[in-house]
Amino acid sequence: AQKVTQAQTEISVVEKEDVTLDCVYETRDTTYYLFWYKQPPSGELVFLIRRNSFDEQNEISGRYSWNFQKSTSSFNFTITASQVVDSAVYFCALSDLIQGAQKLVFGQGTRLTINP
Amino acid sequence: NAGVTQTPKFQVLKTGQSMTLQCAQDMNHEYMSWYRQDPGMGLRLIHYSVGAGITDQGEVPNGYNVSRSTTEDFPLRLLSAAPSQTSVYFCASSYSITGELFFGEGSRLTVL
Image (tube, rainbow over all chains, first blue to last red; front, side, top):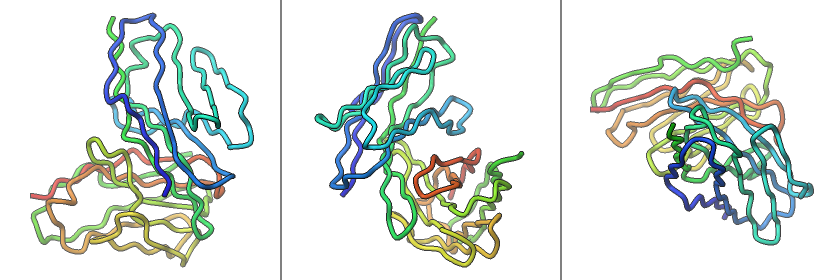
């Protein structure tokens, strides 16, 4: 069965610190997709990134970067020079392609608090 | 574009009552799904649809029904509400089987 583990339930840092959110996944599939979503205090879910299993290149988008390592089944997310607006719950998710549809298997989420 | 629209945003029910959570998307997405979010458990799939007239069960389908008569709409029905169904419900749609999900703003349901 597919599984996503976000071992860090809560993280609290001071503004401008760098912070890494860990994500470890389990799957038997050779083709799969990994996602990160952000859920700010307002409650909506915001898509951040999608990565397929054949592309192990790290990705950088502004202050955000993602490190995908198939060897350790990890897809970690780093925020550089964190800001108060980064405070949110972050979810890592893994796709499970079932019967022509997609089911996302979510981790439990990491609540990130950036203190001024 | 409005994206994915869910109504109502908040609802309080008594045990045994029924209700329907509405979901509509204007992006012509074939794939739609309902998730529930509970503290410490992430989001779990309730039901999903790969197109009009086609629905199937996800991880936690008990107590819920869905139908998909049009591409745009995917309502979720609670037949006889139970306190265990107190949760935040998210409707989502996607343009492809491997694409990212576009989520609605969520519906917070409390069952007393």
